[in-house]
Structures are given as structure tokens and as C-alpha cells.
Length: 403
Ligand SMILES: *Cc1c(COP(=O)(O)O)cnc(C)c1O
Image (cartoon, rainbow, N blue to C red; front, side, top):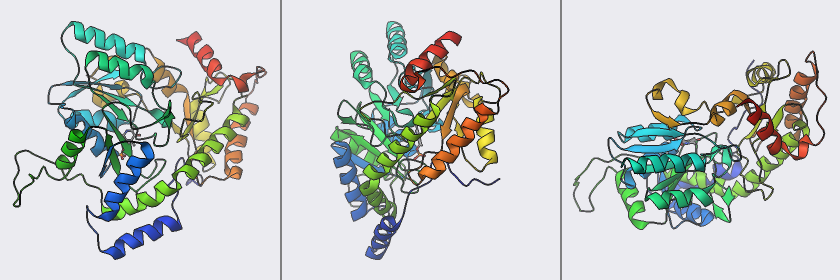
């Protein structure tokens, strides 16, 4: 059955159309122009970063971020194992080798203790990585309060992959502004989209200038075409930047809608036996890009795979959590430091339809179907009282018992 309710479809309308046509009519149908410049400064202002460079994709932004901090062929780069392949692919584009670090249970992001242990070991054998790339998974910031200090201690540049996390924050700082350089994605499934695009953000003017140069075929600043090194064609089109400006104007509303959706799922589903959610911050600093539940599968027919299949039969698109990079055949030779958390999340996680265009009726339909999976099961254990208020504790309890 074709999907009726999608996981995270683009939320675009009249404002995007208006901005796009205005850019079209301006004649700037190219990869430079007033909308690119305005989009860069508006994203910089929104996130509070000094410099923003608009690029063709989040992957391109990661690639240039790695090059700009000096990652070279043969280097090691530590990164989160729980991520989309783009993070690890960009490391390989540089000829470097990814080393995968497992997640912790509170944020589902890179475990600072594992990072610290890995850097200590590497420091002892004089094999420090050229960079650390930390991912903010599903729109929740990693624990940068600790991670920034750890990276500083070893003098290793930190790159924040905030592709999923625009609008999330931690301690009053916006996602994408942690570490030396951060990146965003405006792919069609992200919290805001330009249909395809990305942004590199940094406080360091030299890194911004380096990324800008590499994104435009590394052309030297002289009148003729002079090249001292190999560059890329990674700029964002002016037409797409115009779409991005309209999306950015609507971003706060789109985020609050996603948060409402997340709350609606939690209110209905957290009482189900064996169900928990990605820990939510009470201060609402998660951008709620995707609402992700975990299921322990103890009740027949309620494992992640079965739930997703049941939803699919009704035209509802739900997905597994990213398959960790250390389990991907393409990265089978990569080193890693593991605890089992990311793999457990992959086994148990269900990404629920979370797009800001989703109405309450559709969210309720998804909930009804899921609740039905528990009700239809041959044996239904009695729900434990109080689950709804302590889903995080439940997740830690149920999982620590099995790891
Ligand atoms: C989407 C995504 C990317 C890649 O962004 P694109 O714009 O699709 O190239 C990188 N990292 C993470 C974590 C992502 O979710």
C-alpha cells in the first residue's frame, strides 16, 4: 500500500513559492546571489554563529568541515556510530579512516566516557585522531558540556554534525555552534528544507574562508582562473537559498508543531508495556525532528520490525533507527569502541511520522494502530504505573537488564 502518512515530508507552501519566484524573477539563477548571502546571514543570526557558508548538501558541508580543520589522507577521525551514512562517508572522501564510538542512553549520542577512553588510549600510543565528528541524533544535542572539554584537553578539533538538529539547543547555545565547526542539512526530510542543501558554521574566519574557497573549485583570488589545489563545486543555488529563507522564517512554528506531535505520541504511548522514548528535555531544547520510541518486544508482535510492518500495511511510514555504522558491511574493517547501546537502539527503535504538516487526527491514527498491536497480542501484561512520567528511567532499567 502506498504511504498516506509520511515520516517527515517537506512542509512548504505559499511563502516558499513566493520567495522562490521572486529569486527567479530577479535573474539570479546561479550559485551566487543576494538570496545566498541573505540566507547565510539569517542562519548565522538564528544560530548565533559568526560565519555561515551555504552549500549544496549537508554531506558537502561535512566534507569541507573535515578538510578545513586539516583532515588528510590516512588520518583517523572519531565519530558517532549511531548516524546516517553521510557522516562516515564524508570522512572517507578525505581518504581518512572513521573510528566509531558508541552512544550513551541519555541523549543516544556519542558517549563522552567512551570518547575520553578512546582519546586517552590513542594519546598514549601517539595516534590521536585528526578530528572528532559528533552527531546530534534525531534533533537532540550531544553532551557538549563534557565533549568540548575532552576534545580541548587532547587538542583535537571537534566538528558538530547538526544535520538533524537545527533549532535544538543546549545551555542556551544553538545546535551547530559547538566545536570548531558545525554543519546543517536542508535535505527534503529534515526539519527545514531547500529541497537539498547544507550550511557550514564557524566562529573562525579562516575556516569559513577555506570552506568557501574549496566550495568554488579552489579558485585563487586573481583576475584569471588560477588554481593551486583541487576544489569542489559545492555551492548552494540562489533559487534554493530563497526557499531556505522562507523556511527559516517559519522554522520556529514548524519546530513547535513537531514538539506538539512528540508530546501527543508520548502521552498516548508511553504507558504501553516495554515502550520508552528518546529522553526528552523538560526545557524543550530538543527540536523534535523525529519522535522515536523504543519497544522491548516482550509482547508478541510488538518488536520494532512488526510495528513498522503493521503501520506500513495501513499506509503509514515508520522507520527503524539508523543502523549503526560499525554494523554496516561497507565499514566492516573500521575500528570502534562499543558498549552495545547503539545496536540496542537499532533493534528497538521505531521512528514515528513526525512532520510538521501532520494533523492531530493522523497522530491519533498512528497511536490507535500501535495501541492495537498491544491489545491484539495473546497476553497483555498489566502496564506498570508511572511509566508515563519516567520513560527515561524505564529505558535505562529495561535495557541495563539485558545488556
Ligand atoms: C541528513 C544527514 C546528513 C547529510 O545531509 P545531506 O544534506 O542529506 O547531505 C548528515 N548527517 C546526518 C546525521 C544526517 O541526518
